[in-house]
Length: 144
Ligand SMILES: O=C(O)CCC(=O)C(=O)O
Image (cartoon, protein in one colour):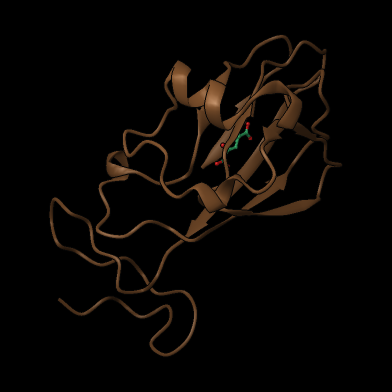
């Protein structure tokens, strides 16, 4: 995913985990590598997260948290702002609760985010596999 928050723009991304039925996968991804392409500061809508929240399991398979879940799982006193320099990469457990705000500055805030899945993961709608990029058979076309 390319995360793009242009100067004085960008939408708020509500509290969520990088898992859920909306992804259309038969297994949840396990880890996301998020890389800052520009500096991500509070003013630029950097990520916010709840340390330890990956231990809660899947809070809402529909992806975004309800107001009740947000009050229970992401109370303001537990929220940490994750500022990053351009080029810094962050490993996120896919169950970690996170969100991000809007960019109120004159500079863009862009990031590249890749979610990694077990090679056995299939698309629910088609049953198809995804390209394997690590280990045996990596970068060869998937067999049917
Ligand atoms: O960069 C952001 O604003 C949010 C990133 C995010 O939610 C993700 O990579 O899963």
